[in-house]
Length: 217
Image (cartoon, rainbow, N blue to C red; front, side):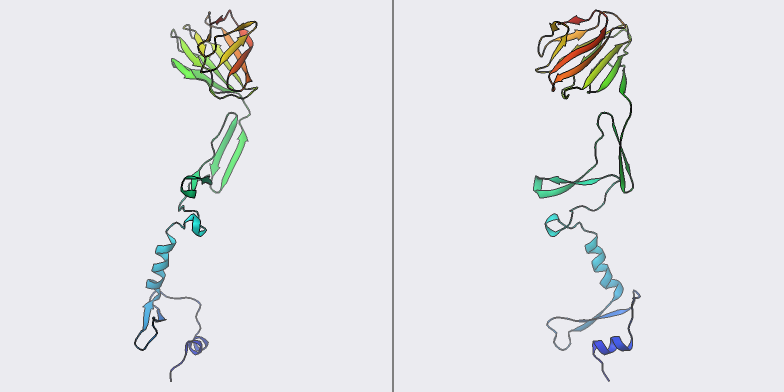
């Protein structure tokens, strides 16, 4: 005697499948001879393939598949998509990316660079030792600095140092002002030092302390 699907379930309910179990299908247009069966393994394989694809943003997904530690989803106007990105540490800030975590902390100390190259563009809130032996070290003011940010140069190498400006920048020391954009501030002795603070965002710096008879151009 044949049974309908409800009767089969009542007589033999199951809560799990073996890969070789058969699944019953009534195939459209549901006429005689269109009944079919499929193993559970073949049925499940169809959905494994679909699940591995990223779901588009306009369908409620992220458009992304895998991530590395610390990555976040960031809005992106290009194609109205979401981009994967990590936070970038800044001056005095440390970022540690872990498994499922991001730790942001203050470095708790000044940033100092032993500059052994011939030239460098300085970063705000960073000190440098001019340390290229008998060769001159050329420092360039940071292009981006907020009011109150500082920079410092300590002389060490016998070649000395010079601090040059970018477009629109100037340096004030006492009653002297450097030439805007093309000016500079330079050591005259090996151990000359200078500390400056930004007083107009990105452009104007004033000397707050110095050692030596510095040359202003």
